[in-house]
Image (tube, rainbow, N blue to C red):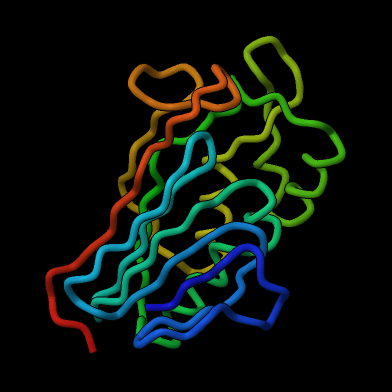
Length: 185
């Protein structure tokens, strides 16, 4: 399993313990594993959760906030999967805040758009500048040559049953669990 921490300087990893080694992937978090019977879990509120998998049994779970997306957390997780033997990666996006509920500053929006394209720009329900997180994640998946499929197209800000720190100040989080019962390499 590869742990991709958000607090390590670029190029430095975390501690090594058995089959776990650390790799930095920008500001954001990702876990990658090729071991069967291992569950990968990440927690999100309004950021996107991304499940990744490959036919070789390499799995990934990504916490993709806007800063992590700008820093390439999705692409770096897919690269880490490649080092574990993944040749083709598919991904699915979990619930996250959508542009209608996510007012965003113009300078930060310009940073995300410069990295992931103008398709990430949107407007809130009241017409203010907004970041389209699902579009940003899709752009990152595309940049990493990941085939996106399915997912949960729900806004954590306005759909019932989800936690949202931005919309309601919720302290709870959604959990994304990715696992395989197959024996890894």
